[in-house]
Image (cartoon, rainbow, N blue to C red; front, top):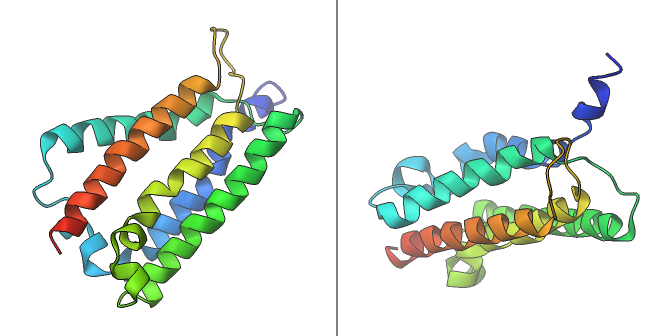
Amino acid sequence: MSTILPYLQNCFLLLLPILLWNVIFMKVLPVQFQKATFWHNIPKYIKFPENILRIVVFVFPLLMKFSIAEPHQRLGFMLYILGYAYIFLSWVAQIYFPQSAWSKSCWGFGAPAYTTIIWFIGIGLIGSSLFIKIPYHYSVYLILSALFVIFHSAHVYIVYSRL
């Protein structure tokens, strides 16, 4: 058990509250965020890279060691908390105030997509080393996360433009 324990202290733990949030509140989101509407007629050149990058940025943290020992890791943890608060508030606005000017604006509608970059940066800074012995710098995760957020935000913009 003691040989397995270090591997359980990975950055995937930081994704669990976000995944749980999505599972719990997916059914109460406005119709334009529901699966059938959200994925309707999204071009393959957006859909495929978005989903491949989604898998990568959500699975890769399993390889990243969770640590807040270094200053950049503590900064990462603060960014993670801040980013989580922003995404939480952006979803609250969409769920409880869908008719507000903010929720109907492009910035408000897209906030649940583009604010994810903040907590992705946080996770990248926290997990600056891997369990496997390969050359790695946290910028790799930051670049992959930025690419995912670009494709995800483009997807959300397509959905918004159809409203």
